[in-house]
Image (tube, rainbow over all chains, first blue to last red):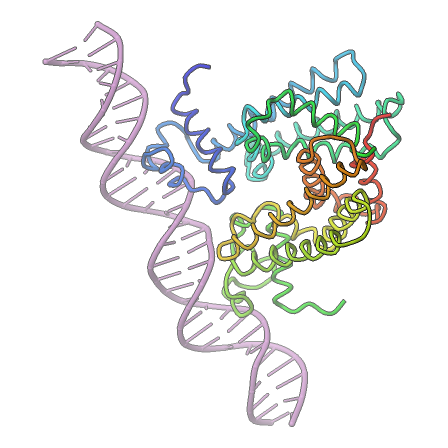
Length: 189
Length: 189
DNA sequence: ACATAAAACTAACACTTGTTAGTTTGGAGA
DNA sequence: TCTCCAAACTAACAAGTGTTAGTTTTATGT
């Protein structure tokens, strides 16, 4: 990994603070203190608080979009596609735990980029749902309510950012494997 | 249902606004405008913004605690207890969708009551985990990682507040039934 | 040793925040 | 009709907000 620029340091520090208190409750003075500088100095590197939020959220959202594009075009079973989605979430979240908190909780504070974010999210969910519907049609999966399946999987995956930091011993592959068992194969005997 | 007091109207309106933008981003002037009055007038009914948050969150948290106490003491299988937990979440969430958003996203802005809230949450999660562990021991469930099972179930249940308002056609019993299928019996064939 | 540019600083701005004090309004019961 | 009180109002506060302008420091390559 290459060295972080000062701007990236600021964005990463901000993501950490946003995770703890949310975008609105973190002031530029909080962020400056965490960086060991004064608030005004931040503006040598960034143009606004909003720019930081945008950098955090849109970067990750586009990563998800790229991952999903690959998955939907793969020539594999729909169940395999679901397992790849699980792996996608585990990997992105493991690499950017703090940013995922903003993506989940502070997207509504995006200003110029709100519409674009919502479009990416909508497309993602539509692709996800379509995989589930195809899986049911192809008899790979039970005839459960597809929307409930997606809801259940997606909310679990979206909450990984809360959980991964607590379990440093578990590596990404193991976690994805465990999640697949629980989410797809069920828990009862 | 009895008529709401003015104070309850304020708290319910606040919960709605907190759901949309989060506690920190909602100003007392926003809340007043939503009530059709001036900010200062709010203080005839409440003593602080913080009191509103506390009223929203602690009320629900205690409801969960009471529900869990009944479940752990019931003489039923551990799988049945899990199903009752699902029903508990569906019912509480259906009755207070907006409040659940604050419980999930704004608990860290509690001041005096933060420690108490964390204690309730901790106890709840410990009870939840213990049921799963007992279920595995009793061979009612597969030998999956108990913490991952709890994490998956709990995050799905905690996110119900996002989903219930979109599906007004589905009643609480149907939803609980569907969730039980997906969460407990798995989705694959 | 010196020039340069990145990155820090001080000081201040216009505005928003939660909250208080004191006053007026409006409607229900006597 | 008068009393009374809940519930609204106006005005203001002290502190905190994101951001700007202009200046000084620090480190690096020549």
